[in-house]
Length: 270
Ligand SMILES: [Zn+2]
Image (tube, rainbow, N blue to C red; front, side):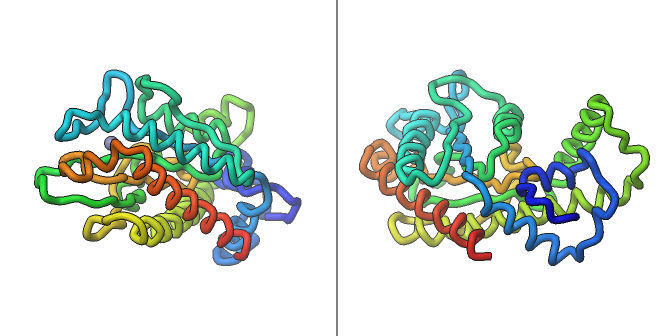
């Protein structure tokens, strides 16, 4: 890929099949991944925060009757406020009030906005009332394959509509490049998740195996590093009470913002 000062987003768009030009494979994968990472440091970052659930979907219901959708929205607003206060980021929320937003629409929103980072905010309810703690999820590779392939297929279809002729390119080349982009995105997601576990762990109780992976639909953008944070367990009386306190949510939000800062700092240093 020639060095023309394009940003990571544009590069990933190219990779995901929008306009695979000649010489797309001229860099070794490692050098290419490094180039992607460098690009990520080169513009004003847009962070999309996704407050889980909303509207007719309350999410988990706490032992005192509080809804997860209220906790997620209040925390998301706090994270947005603190991120904006750093003056390093532009911030957008997938919902700003108590409304239902489909999972696919949340991902589509982040992709349309060309987000650099997607942070989904939730709270758990577990069968054992004695268990409490926060946890952080990234997309499991296995779970991602089908969805990612479907998204890739629809991307390519959209490009055909836009008049870009992909028929000149071997499908296998598109697949390799798409997979490379997806893996790079996943590596960045894992980097953020590991930092989140550390930062949160300094301030609040964490679940065992606090970094987990699962096939969450909202984590399936192949070109946006994405992490889902479970702030704590609403099924635990103590944590249910804590999550309803603005001061506790501020503590959580502060840790999240510290991790986002670390994440972009580490990319800048890369
Ligand atoms: Zn949830």
